[in-house]
Length: 121
Image 1: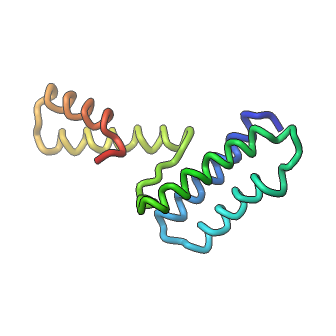
Image 2 (image 1 turned 180 degrees about the horizontal axis):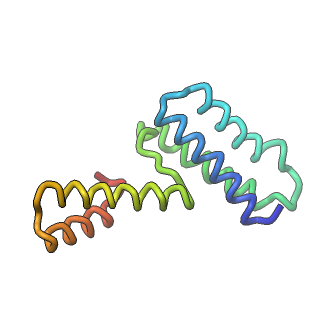
Image 3 (image 1 turned 90 degrees about the horizontal axis):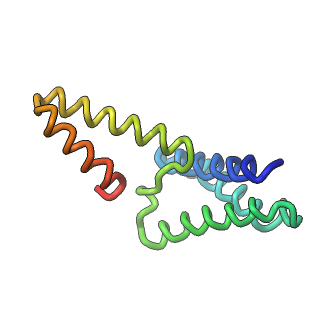
C-alpha cells in the first residue's frame, strides 16, 4: 500500500464519519471513529505505516476539536469528495441566483464571494 492509498483510505474513513454525522447515524459514526482510532493505535504500528498513522491522528484531532468546540455539524468532507461537494454547492448557488433573476455580473460577484467564504457562512 502506497502513502497516497493510505491517505485515501484514512480520508475515506473520515468522510464516512462525516456522512454518518450528517445522517445522525450514531452507530456508524462510532464505528468509523473506532476504525480511525485503531489505525493510530493498533493495526498500523509498523514503521512503514507512519504516514497513515499521522494522517489518522490529524483526522481524529479534527473530530475531537470540533466536538469540544461544539462544531461537529460543520465538519466537511476532505479530498476529492470535498471538491465534488463544493462544486455542486457552487453550481446550485449560481442556479438559484439565476432563477431569482440577478444580472450576470452580480451572479459572478456573489459566486466569487461564496467561494471565498465557503464553510464560514
